[in-house]
Image 1 (cartoon, helix red, strand yellow):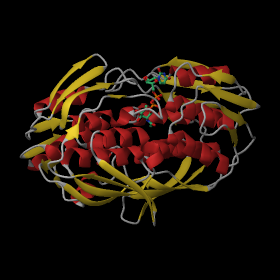
Image 2 (image 1 turned 180 degrees about the horizontal axis):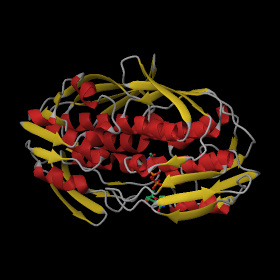
Image 3 (image 1 turned 90 degrees about the vertical axis):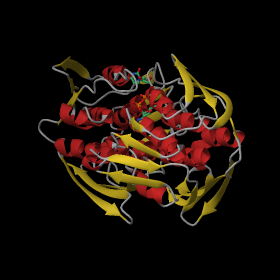
Length: 433
Ligand code: UD1
């Protein structure tokens, strides 16, 4: 199993190009199930989750190819879904990636039936799919759960609903948005999630011929059409990847420009980092927007509190990385996790590196600045791994981050991008360390 070996204590300087957003790419890939025509998706990050979703689509009767773009950090997918006699998303694939549940709505809408494995538990909380299932049932789906699978069918087409989600859910909004695009009648989705990745999916659906109003608001109105067509679409920049590199520079010191990112998607983090003392500038580059972050060596960071909330609130997917930054800030920072009930597993590993922190339920209290010293740490999930890398970049001496298959699920070329800005970080095969 690969590990990352980091020699900490070096500031980061240079440029990093931000890849396409994994969390936008996954629902956009699932949208290929909505049409028999070819769909070409570019700027997909070259990460394991994208390959898993393509395998899921292939298992569901989709012809799919993935080709590397430019430097290999992004991929283009060419997809055409003729369908299959027995559309089934198997446990072996779904268990490795919960977002596989996003195929359920499109399959039901286009083929009238689907079998999808229940995703099961997850390292960061219970993560049920009840919100997805409740809305689909209201649209006329007959659902039966047995042997670990959701067996779903519908007589005729799915029917439009006026539906208020009980809780804001990114995945449920995406699933029902796709289902409604081919349903009979006009669906109104209230309390819909506002994450930029939903805007990107909606944009793709519109390019495919869907009728959607209310983009960028919590109420989406979708008038179903009988068929959608193919198109070409480039997914948006990954705000979480960009935010991770911003946190890495804030924690270690340095001066880095992020190319091809969207500052509007990162306001809550930019605001916190600026208030804690980093200098952030935005400008239009040749290749999209740019963000520059500067924290000169010796310049003190101020501690700031953060609470994770649905967009435009502070993202739960940056909570672990921000905690790593706060270990270096002067004073006490209180970090509240408002989305998932069990998302502080990185805290104990950060403590092993020397962080001074406590967790209590959904709150973590970080006292800084702490002198971090390298050791071997083990990652429990994708973003927790990123936090450990950031802490390793700060820590004196050598840090080894184990179980980096979590990182490979969501970061394209992480160690290469960090090497490009001066980090001493190397990927080593398990047997060699
Ligand atoms: C997506 C992101 C994930 C991010 C999360 C929150 C993808 C592929 N993943 O996950 O990286 O951390 O949004 O921003 O885009 N819930 C229910 N019932 C449901 C669905 C969700 O109770 O049927 C709860 C969850 O347990 C959680 C909250 O709602 O507490 C938000 O989850 P949700 O927005 O659905 O997260 P995902 O779409 O799974």
